[in-house]
Image (tube, rainbow, N blue to C red; front, side, top):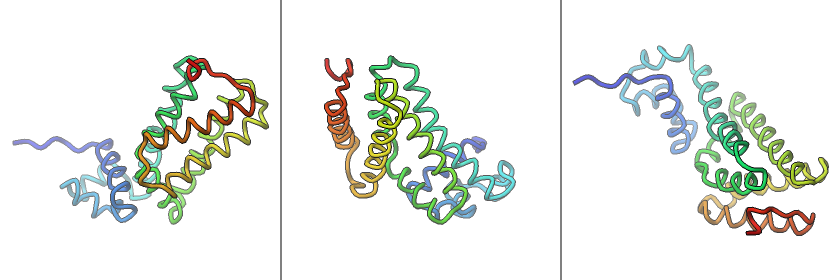
Length: 189
């Protein structure tokens, strides 16, 4: 019986899973190879060294949990985007989000990626609020508060379900709409 070849994407998906479950300890070459049932040679066939693996791993996380989410949202009507962002963001793997942030405390590659992701995500929310009619300054203030609450809730209430996060986000959005007189057809119906 022939075993399926373990490709680069398989290593990256395994790495994301290991990071979410075991933290940085799950990202050693030894831990990855053991979990995959593969040799070090198989790992190094795809990655020049461990740092190249980490760069690719964090780029995959950024792509899946930020760029792909934004692309999905941009394909929808303006009035549906904020609610869709809330739904998609609150259904991300919160264990992985926390693990990446924890890893970033000790690893420069992860730190730079998290800083870039935080900037991209915040800028995206700013643009959503500007599209709804807020000034750039108002949008920035609200987006920063909203994103800080999103990240903070992952840390303070790690057991919070995606449904509870979504409800919290909807209450925040409702307060913003009332404060600034915004209306969203999708949420008002």
